[in-house]
Structures are given as C-alpha cells and as structure tokens.
Length: 509
Image (cartoon, rainbow, N blue to C red; front, top):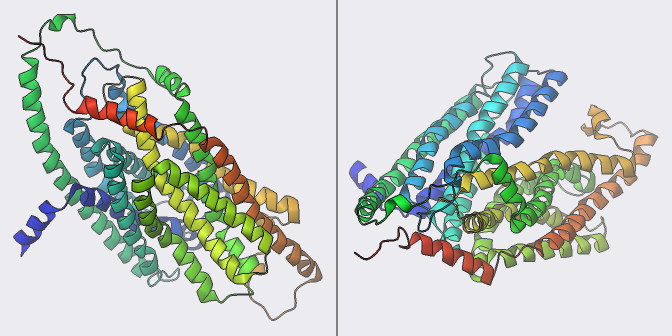
C-alpha cells in the first residue's frame, strides 16, 4: 500500500506538485490573517501602544524584506550575459527548491509561535510578526520565481497557476474548520488545531520539494555532463571577455529604464490598494448597508464566499488567459469593474439583492485580478532578461522589487478610506463608541439617528466611487503597457531560443 502510494506520487505532473505548495501556505496564512489580531487583543491583552509599535515596525519590515531577500537570492544572476550563456538551468530551479525545503517548515513553526504566550505581549507581537513575515516572504518569492523558471510559454505558466489557484481554494477551507474550534475562553482546542495544520504544512513542504528536487537533479546531472563535453570543444577560450557584475545601484537604474515594469507597478499599486480596501471595509459595508436587510447567516455566507470564490473564479480566468492572453483578460476585468460600479451607482443603495451581488463580486473580481498578475510579472522577468542580457533570469529579485513599490497600497487603503468617510460624514471609526455594535432594546440617541442616513450614504458612495476611480486609473496605465501580442511573442521566442541550444557556441574543428 505504501509503495503504491509513493509510486502514484512520483507519477504526479510537475504542475500539480508545484501547485500543491500553495495549499501548504494557504492553510496557515488564512488562519493567521483571521485570528492574529483578535488573539493578541482579546486573549493576550496587548496594550494599544505596543500594538501600534509592532504594526509600524512590521509595516516597514514587510516592505523592505521582499527586495532584500530577492537581492540576496538573485544578485549572482545579474552579471552581463555572454553570447550563448545558459538562461534557466536545472541548477537554478534546484536552488529555489532547496530554499523552499528549508523555509517552508520554518514558516510553519513561526506560525505556531503566535498561539502560545511565551513573552510579554508587546515583545511577542513584534517578534512573531517579523519572523512570520520573513519566512512567508522567502516562501512566496521562491515559489513565484519558480513560475518563471519552470516554464516560458504562456500555456505552461497558466497551467502552473491553475493548480496554484485550485490548491489555494482547498486551503481556504481551513478558515471554515477553524470556526468550530475558535474560543477565546478556552484556547486549547484551537492550539491543537493549529499544531495539526502546521504539521500538515511541514510534511507537505518536505514531500513536495523532495519530489521536485529528484526530478530536476536528474535533469541537472544530464545537463552538467553535456556542458562538460561542450566546454572541451571551445576554441580560443582565453579571448572570452570576463562577465561584468551588476551593483544594486546599476540594477535600480536598469529598472528605471524598463518602461513596462514602471507602468505595471503603477497599475499594480492601485490594484493592491483596491484589494486591501475591500478587505478592510467589507465588514463596515455589510454593517451599514445591509445589516437591517439581511440575516446574520447571509452576511456570514457573503464573508465566506469572499474568501474562497476568488480562487475558484481564477480557474475560469486562467482558461480565458490561454485563449485570449493575460493582457486582454486583465483589461476586461478593469472594464467589468467600471461597468458594475456605474450600474450600482445608478441603481442606488436601496436595491438589496443587487447590493449583495455587487459587494461580493467586487471583492471576488478584485482578488482574482491580483492572482493573475503573477503571470504578468513572469513576462517582465523574460523581458528584463532579454533587455539587460543577464546570465540568468533574476525572477525572485524582480518579484521583490514589484512588492517594494506596490506594498504601500496596503497602508494607503485604510488611511484613505477612513479619511474619505470622515470627510464626507464626520464619522471617525477610531473614536467610535464600542457599544454601537451591540444590539439593544434602548432607542438610539437623536444624534446617532441623524448620523445613520448620512453614514449609510457615505458608505455607499465609498463602495462605488473607489472602484470607479481605481478602474479609470488602471485602464489609463494598462493602456501604456506594451508587453503583449507580437512583442511578448518575440521576447518569449528569444528566451526560448537561448534555452534550446544556442548556448554555448561550438566552432567547427
């Protein structure tokens, strides 16, 4: 039985094993996002000053560690390419798999550090956040970089991304299971649940990376033997110029000249802002626009759908990407976002069913767009490789630089959203009476009753005008992005050609 299971695992396609890595991240990360704040505030009783200090340090570290780890990982690949240099060898893939095999289990262990009190709440909060985010960043960077290193064609990359979305959707089920064990008063069951999740993640990372490493170690050995033979056929080896190492300043200068990279990060900054705006204000919209119109179970259903539907919806989007291209699908989603928002604006806040559909679909389509953009980054990796004649594709570093520019959108979302709401309605979310959420038989104060219609109208305008503004900005910047169609085919053909035998040059003897 055990041997038969191992034989089945060895026969799994590479895309399935690669996608399964998303499962072992999502089963932990979704639980982390849902409970870490409530755990430290309600269970460990962290004070307000320590909480904001921890969040501030985490914000800075979260923005800087992506390019830092990307640079440490890929700086050796930035040397100028000589004619016929190898581009994406099995050794590069093996390097990323080794990093995943080490950082994946450490990521799971850092997840467990949140659920047991082992230090002063303020100190534990800061250390846990930074440690968790460090290992999560390492896992995400190398996992995303493999998307560019394992495949070049759009068809193969969408296949890899398809399985990532499928396994991420399965991983989202951990959120639903966590509801059955979450209890602030008795934390034991929840801790056991988290230990089980972490063990599943550790075993999954170890097994998946080992299976992939065995495949590419065989390919790497064959490649190394071939290169050893070809090197013996070199003529005039002494005349080959020395490769030039690229410094960080020179790399940043190259990025400023990479036109498509600049337009993409401008568009993606708006996308990250909109994704986190929806996440931050989803409960507020449910409370002030729908709480009197729908049941609690319907609100919970909408919240649950917003977690799992983006992954399932992305499976359809990826099939569209195979037929129409990523650029056209993303542009279509921007037009869809704009059209739905205008229709909702014209319909008004009193159309309950339409409002439910819009609130859910707005989050689902926005999150789905975010998940497609990794495919665009892999195309930018190819273009960066060709434009700057790199020795290897610096995949992790480019993903890190994209994160550096776009992660401020996570901070802008709650700041701009609360400022707009306060400017229009006078409602300050930070000074709100905490008893305002409690259902009571006592009549509302006159000031509260007067504020409620204005607040409801303000929430509605915030709900529809933010997507309209984001869609217009994104359509403007996306129209300037030229890495699609014939240009994208040319870039891929050049990279594919470099991978398929143009390297190294062998002269006739």
